[in-house]
Image (cartoon, rainbow, N blue to C red; front, side, top):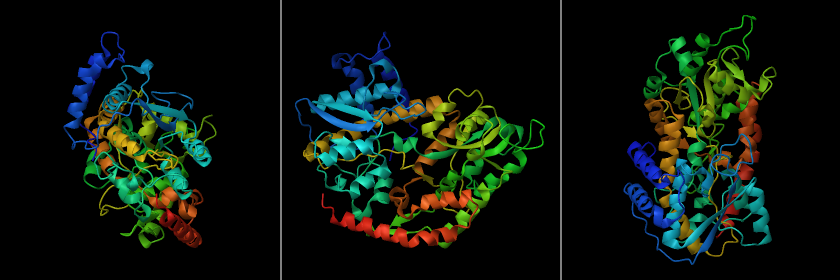
Amino acid sequence: MKNYISIILALVLFVSLVAACGDSGKINNSSETNGSAITNDIAEAGKMRPQLTVPKIDYGGYQFRILSINSTVTGNSTSPGGYYYSEYTYIPEMAGEPINDAIYERNLKISEEYNVEIIDKEVPDVFSEARKIIASGEDVYDVITPFIDMSFNLAQQKYIYNLNNIPYLDLKNEWWDQVLIEKLSLNNKLFTITGDISMEDEEMNWLLIINKVLMEQHNLTNLYDIVRDGKWTYDYVHGLGASVTHDINGDGVTDWEDVYAFGNGYYGGQFFYFASGENVAVLDKDGYPQLTIGRERSISVMDKVTAFFNDFNFILWADFTTSSGVAGGVYFRTMFKENRLLIFMTNIYAIKELRGMVDDFAIVPGPKYEEKQDNYYMIVSTHACRGICIPVTNTELERTGILLEAIAYYSKIVQEAHLDVTVTGKFIRDEESRDMLELIFNSRNYDIGKAFGWGEYIGQIAEAVRYNKGFAPLVEANKTRAETEIEKSYKIFTEIDT
């Protein structure tokens, strides 16, 4: 399991990065100059995990080729408004930025131990590029990184390898995401993975942020205590609305110019559905998917979510804005910064936009359906979270397995630069929010039914909320289709031997 909030290691990393930058403020690319700092960082990071056991082989300067999405934080900005970090490329112009410098250190360690160069090609659409290259039979990339949902599309086209068959790739190791492995191994085969090698299984966790100014103005109980006591539920969140939502401009209506308890859109219903611990489907002990959506509790959950989202004395929908001149989801951030929105649903990926906010905010998980629920559950957005895949055009699987295992192992310093220095150091406002982040990360969940899209049930959740419909008929109408699609996917995965 990742050591998410290791502040001491963060300080160690920060000090070493400063030392590595030298007087000029830029990292010297010479291994002779930075060797001692790198050795110290790697050694410190390695104290918290088992020994790396893959062989060290001189690959003669081989270029290890990765296909990834255009990054917009520390790398190539081609998609304004995006917040993907460059995960494999060191950017000299960004020297001094902790994540960028940690990537440099990790890559240099890989270069020193295996005599390889990590080459990362960034494109706007990894899925389309990968599918085109693989269909042509060209050996262009060792690794591709499509969104997890799209990985299963490639798997069903037999375009990527079953990772369980890759030599030296030991998915039982703690630097691989064990929750993903458990939840997404259809027929006990796995075609995509994440973990310490990527920052996105943290970035793509949904959460709620709470405006502390409004909390104080309305004398709200410390919400951190409510979360810790297990009382952070749908009903509790809903109950905040009566005391917070109000007209402030005197026009007799509550709208975008006023104060609201909650800002979201009908699409947010799926986050609350998954926060209840319900799923679209789960795998049985044999790796066969079982539909769970439509069971009695899931219907009760969705009926409550639908009612919750259609109480417009409580919630303001992003889909209804016309006066603000910008998309509702974007304008919610403006309302939040202006202390006119108590609760805003977002994720770590997007929380960076609040770095310049003057007033404080708190971070909390999504609410439980009811107090007796055993845990909080945070769904990972697999439609936007990249996974590691190996294309079938790759003919050097032993080398790929060794290098992936080593890159993941040494990515601990990148994770610490991301979570301890950048997320908790720059974006989080208090120690209790750090505790909430740890709770959120430890409560993450993946849903195989969501990832495959069987029965289009995610769309049905949105439809129920948007049109204030009963959920049971929607589930039943798509059940036969979903079961047929499950059977088809399972059959394809049975046929795949690679």
